[in-house]
Image (cartoon, rainbow, N blue to C red; front, side):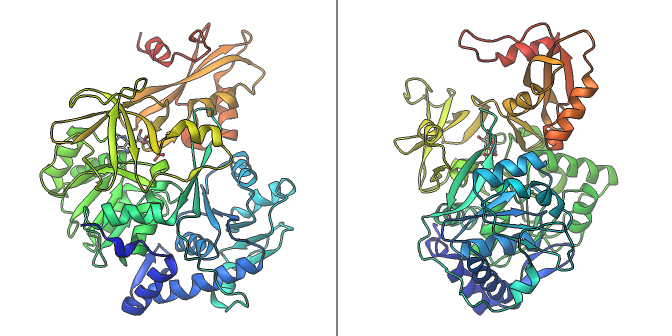
Length: 516
Ligand code: AMP
């Protein structure tokens, strides 16, 4: 059943929870927790203060923080101020941070003392920035931009009240995703689109409600966690424990407390958890009623082995940033292992020939396209890519899929060339751009190479400029300019990059070179 009552402005949801379950913990991390009553009050204060500091409706505010309750308060406050929250990984390199902050023209940045030096370094290149809110109050940093302590703002009534817009169709989140051109694209998402996923998927299909206590090991800057670990909690009144970073030992320790009912993660995490639990001889996940997997293909063998080991359903769902996440989800009843489930009720999903757009017969492979209320508002400042991705309301996913006679969908690959390393997306072109910045590299290309632990990893193929080429130098250069998960797992010297007549890299030929 569709939960229409959950599609309402954040302020109304928070007010309802503050009234009905004010003393209940909403979000927790290792250092603190916030109740629904405090979340309602503190995010209103914070929203009023950042509006007074110059965040106008529609302006962007970056959240450059690790997973934490602070992250949650900053994000919700931005939306309550009428702004657009821009999650930025706390592990992003300075150039990745700079790209996002300048592309979105961020007016406000929420960060901490550990990350403030990155901003201080970039400050001269951020003309739009008006204020920096530091989450740990006792800060001393070299930043010249006006700084404020989050705790002080959140606890003090502002002179300007939170805007709390009634319009939930405007951009509220800007989530950067890897693009085929190598430059990340800013996906504009609305509160309606995000809440619609809770209303049609997490609440009715997963059964998420105020009686759930969720354990989340996911990075909050990714759309999957933003949707499930942040917004669906706020919508349903559940409680969540946010791990700052995934660690198998810590996840098992937390699960052994028996207090958690639901855990979302990516296939690699379920693999690690299962291996560790089996090695310890402990397979009891007391209290857990369901696990959710998304972000990458969940092998049927892993799904079956996990459920056999733990006796807990592991439900695979298929989500994309551009569709505010979920497109399909597995039901809790009869399922097909290896399938990512059924299209969400209310979505139109087709599998078509990518060229002719003719529908494929059940069982045959084609591109999955989707239309519905969760499709993005568009890419920020990129009408060409938006028009290419969304045609007549249909979002063209670039993923290859098959449907069985009962409508169960299986993702078989992707037309897009993203490399998914343990659930994290990497665009080959982004690595290539960095590597081509080196004098010693004449040409290069990146291809996904299979990896038994992470699914796939980027392999770098280089055409050196001279005989003194040093792979270690390339890797050091990558480490400097790319997040660690994007650093190639291996470097291979080749004589020429194979390309099509129109100049596109033929990546499968690169893979064959390694297989030989
Ligand atoms: P992102 O926009 O970063 O969320 O990445 C979306 C992509 O992740 C999709 O286009 C798929 O290629 C992949 N993906 C997400 N969920 C699944 C799943 N359950 N099975 C297979 N691939 C998935």
